[in-house]
Image 1 (cartoon, rainbow, N blue to C red):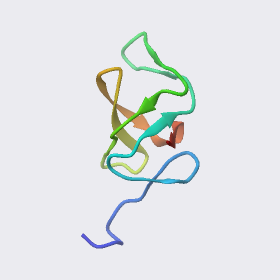
Image 2: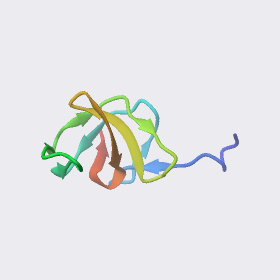
Image 3: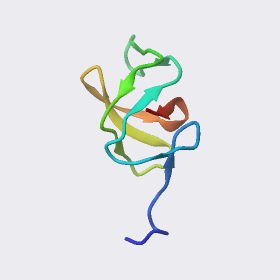
Length: 75
């Protein structure tokens, strides 16, 4: 895969995210299908990139979730 083919994933502040990075949630988020919320300031470690440039996967409270990058900042 060449440099041009790689997808660039950026957080809400424009920092480039890579596999294994840690991010922080910048806004309280409601969890779809649950009554829970992800609090602002929650650290998500060891993220995985998805097929979309605006989403990542990470473990929050022992559950794997897909999070939008517009609500995250690189830690």
